[in-house]
Image 1 (cartoon, one colour):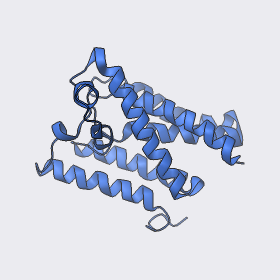
Image 2 (cartoon, rainbow, N blue to C red; image 1 turned 90 degrees about the vertical axis):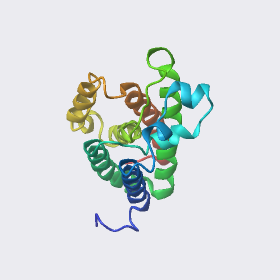
Image 3 (tube, helix red, strand yellow; image 1 turned 90 degrees about the horizontal axis):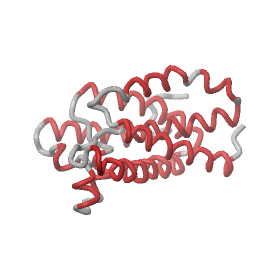
Image 4 (cartoon, rainbow, N blue to C red; image 1 turned 60 degrees about the horizontal axis):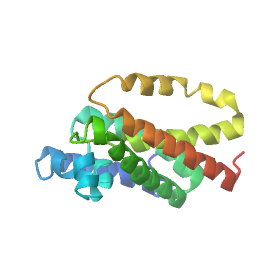
Length: 188
């Protein structure tokens, strides 16, 4: 598998490029988290629905960007190869929109003004798809390799700076999407 062939993984590399460009524009103060982030108030109450998508491409700190893009690079290439680019793109954007909308709605009571940003909710969804496919092919033994990832995700939810609702809505969307994909494509 040639890891740097842009034509082999156009969706994964395109998504990474968009995230990096937006990161640069935010840090050069051309764009701001306030313009792009998603919150219950801005996204749903004020009907600025575009924020569901823009927030998933918005990272402010370098470490946030680096962790998310490294994760997207790893899981994205695997799923884009397995699902093909068009199906992978549909999965990515479906998780982004559905998971982001549910996350914004669930923030209504607890943190209606707090901006949620980052690709990690969608990445959690991709992990959910991967888990379902791996389980359908290899059974429970395939999930044992995911234990460190699941533990890290669980530990991250203790941080007040991380939108754990976004992670879990993404993961749930991915698991449901994975179930649909397994029934359509019959991996194995």
